Length: 250
Image (cartoon, rainbow, N blue to C red; front, top):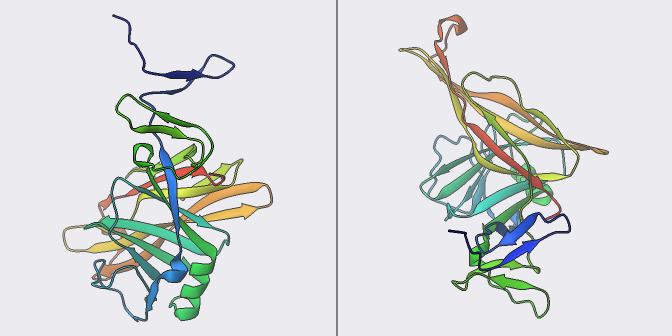
């Protein structure tokens, strides 16, 4: 029995572009970090701080806590400078973004203000949740009345993905022919271990735009060890890096 579509849109090459099963993510808002509170702390020892929607200065990095974080949403990071490095962790409906600034072993209020002025956090929602307020344009709905497409919204276009597993310990070094934003599903703790010792690292990434060259880079930063160790005795290395690269012109 042939499958009957409620609607079907094709381009000039007869390639299916949209049908009633089409799903994407649409830009909902730009979360301005300039509106976040600043908490001056010399040492950050836990993820789940009681004060949320706050930027903590930290000793080795700045920490941005975004809550509540809806797991059905996507958050993309945009940055227009090359000296900020990002890593993320999702826990208890909180998205924590760890940020390092080149050449800094401790961070202060001025660094937080620098972060806020050069970084955008873009929030995307499922296309079926789009509520349009446009007075002109094209809207397409499926048979259930859900929004399939709205010409007044900006949708995601994926240009690449980056994952690392335990067998790949090389740094991230990827080039693209377009300006981009990064959706970090995870970019978190890595651990070298033996039965007595654990040494923790965090995988950070940064966005570089050198003329027409657009690049995402990564590096490891040691966080702490319990206790100090001899590298040769370790038996494992775990990566937890999963990034989605999307076009900036969204």
